[in-house]
Image (cartoon, rainbow, N blue to C red; front, top):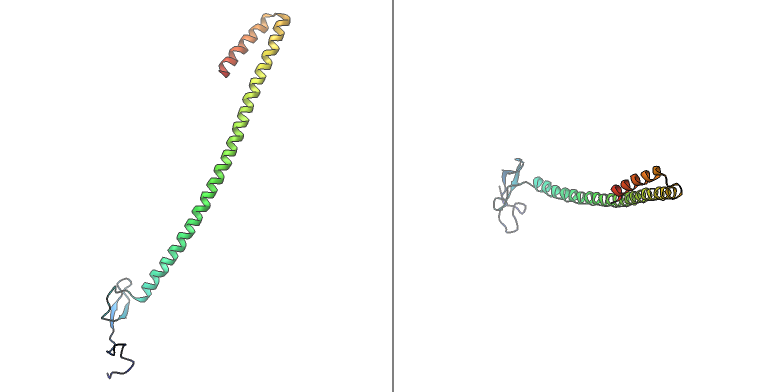
Length: 137
């Protein structure tokens, strides 16, 4: 075959290509025999680049989802803290109410004891006093 301008590379030497199989996919492709490097075809190189782009995109989406989940968890913690505060408030209000009722009953019994000096009221007061002593100390 005669040398023509088409068959010469930049150095003026004849172009030569060899047909080799791709080390990844096995498909044959042409490569310059003087080039060094992996025996990987252009399609596999493009596929690898696309995979990297997709992985970066997926990674970004994973980070977005992770951030959204973290925000959701923080919101739930805040709601739990508010709920705990409300629960604690209700709990202490109930305790205060129970103590108030016990003290009111105690005062009523003392007044009845002063008025009547009845043994029945004294026994009730002793029972109430023991109950209050167990509950509130």
